[in-house]
Amino acid sequence: MPRGDKSKYTDKQERKADHIAQGYEARGVPEKEAERRAWATVNKDDGGGKAPGGSGRGKHTGHPAAHKGGRKGGAASAGRTAAERSASAKKAAATRKRNAEHHAAH
Picture 1 (tube, rainbow, N blue to C red):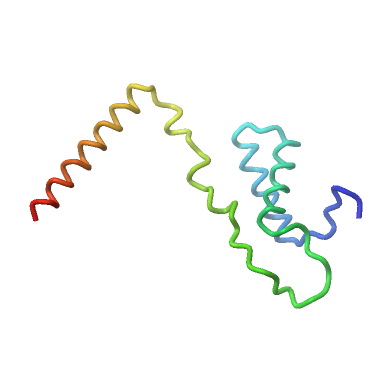
Picture 2 (cartoon, rainbow, N blue to C red):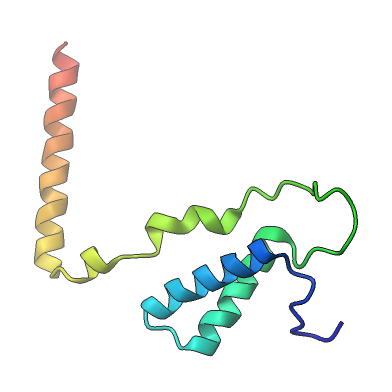
């Protein structure tokens, strides 16, 4: 099997790679790079293509790449100025302090 041959991948792995690549392209990554990253992610998740035969019950992977969901966006934070982020952080710290004092009183 030559390098880059995708014949050993399951339909589900191919769908997964397409979906991941679309996400990268939506964030402005060039198409070829998005596809490369997508297949690298599928390989990391599933341990590469699946060989034929067997019952189809392999080792559970835990899907490590699937846990990065909320950390990859950043659009909301990127659109705010440093002053806005700082004000938000100060407000959050004040809320935590107020809540701590409230809970300590009870």
